[in-house]
Image 1 (cartoon, rainbow, N blue to C red):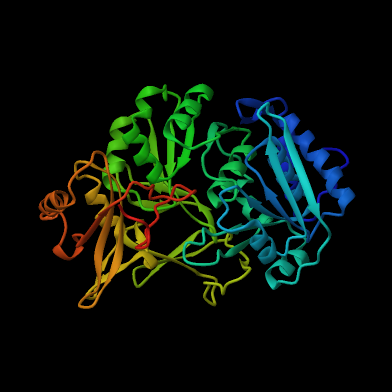
Image 2 (tube, one colour):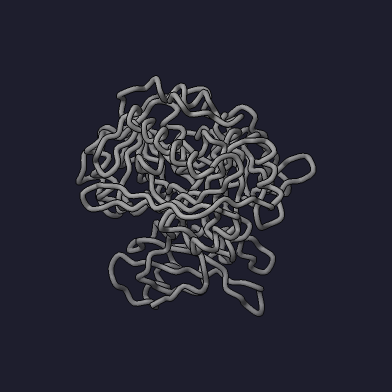
Length: 463
């Protein structure tokens, strides 16, 4: 790494450590291994390019790509130079131009890959000074920044600004060296966490071109993957597909699931299907980073274990204070109180030091003053025979304010009236009457977004 001058606070320890891993494999992208030595050569080449273009502290760069050697090398070079990176994938929530405007990006770098594996980077832009207060804080600190955008399901996506130097402090103490699948996206806090956790420990990150169950399981088998970070929605798809029975998953030792509540029935089926695997519930938000956790075995109860994490429960809602919190939003008011506590908007139950996440308050259904969390109803309906997937949401009602509605993916065709009768009988002893769906519709569409997270909306097209 000679010739690269790191910016103040740009995690010099990380680059010193990466250099010690030498010819160990850092990435496997499109089945091609990339050593740490080669990855750092990419970083150095990018540093020369960035220097020539005047990209350094305070420069905002949109980086559109995946976890390839070129894109990861550029991300590391931007961190080392103290620049502000806005990672994007083709599944970005809104148009690149909108994100560029919100983030005040002067530069855009897009990676494309030819069928033969050759990777090309296109760079456009010019120097641009930032004016947003939260970005100016990064400039004053001289620290690298990271901007992540929400999914935008309720409107314009919010730009979350992190001090990358603070985020990286979590990885100063190296973890276990292992092979991890890059399932979570490059522009998602979970994907960023997976990347830095793997590289800072000298592990190997295996990328995939699609996230269908057979592709994921084939990659686990081919590259002897140890850890799969993913979502409950995908794990349900995996079990229904039977892909875990068609591939050798004997190397898999840890499945870390998060981003949404896990149905208890899916957790139980997963434990039965993969007895050799430890199932770990994770918790993270774009605004907070990914917090270290411990799961109570076989349950949905989770405990925060990382140093510096503090939690409070206020009126049943989780508040968190952590040094990895964002600096602020680019385009929305913060949700911090005067003492630095962040409102997660997640409703929880408490059992000693353990919490159970019930769901977002924005998903709450109010039936005549009685609260219904969709995940509680979905958990029951997923046990109903012939149900492949389900999304529960609220519909307006003149008498009760809202009623519970369910949109169902069936395994095999079924008459709607017959299904509703069977559903009511099934739910009779499993749910209070006000939680049983009143409105039911069938759909053939997937009920999850690009981040493999459940979509709950009353506007999706039924059939």
